[in-house]
View (cartoon, rainbow, N blue to C red):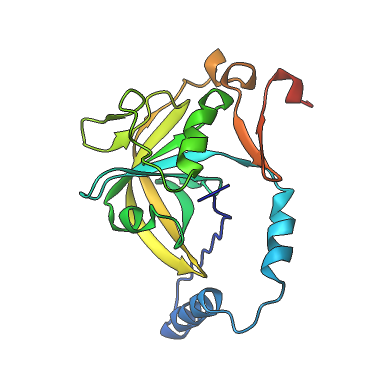
Length: 209
């Protein structure tokens, strides 16, 4: 899937002496610039290929026009403060805008929004040519109203990791079904999942418990 990313979460939290803090910096350097590859890129991708992930579309506008990118690397890391993380490949045409933007909108998609997922994953097109499927929030960010849920957030940190940038976002605003609402159940929401290079939908038949 074009522009879909494999997550590269890295987190180090150490409180203490200068020596401890120096060790953390060293660890970061080792993660970002490994001295040797333990496995090949194909082996690494093969391992993640069998690991299903939710599908999201990230939009932003840093002043030069809107961009959109489909990603399977979005995940939450903290509820207080509300933080999420995703990665963006340097090969993505949306990367420069996302890295320079102050805010982004992360759309969490259901199968009914597969067209939006495919739109964000297709290279070489104007993803915002159809003005009927997107709007701007009062704060200016482009977004797709049809998304099952979306989160507007401010970029609070970025870290280079291999050929990607890991982006941390603090949520400022959310739009999603209320807890307990039937619209939040898989039988209604039909969450969109990417697995082994194929789109899948979850529904009542996917429940095992």
